[in-house]
Length: 105
Image 1: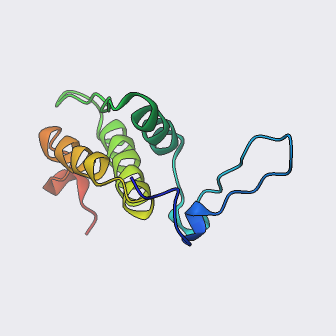
Image 2 (image 1 turned 120 degrees about the horizontal axis):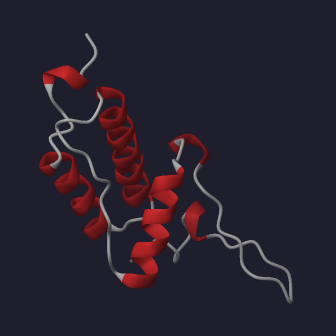
């Protein structure tokens, strides 16, 4: 992972002596709480827990799951975590979150 290295904005750490470093989130990403938790969990454990969604769930719940996964996809792309990006894509496909019913006209 190269997200926290180099001259990228995401790699700039704000901290004064004796304080913990603070990493800023990209403002334009509109990052969801799910995406933040998923990326932190992945960095610390190497594991990704995809949201659960069944075909019997309401369309609104599937839409929330899709928005969360798209937010994670964007954040993992910005922070250069390709393994997590691939898992987010896989979850979208496996959960069948992109269907005619979930697309706006």
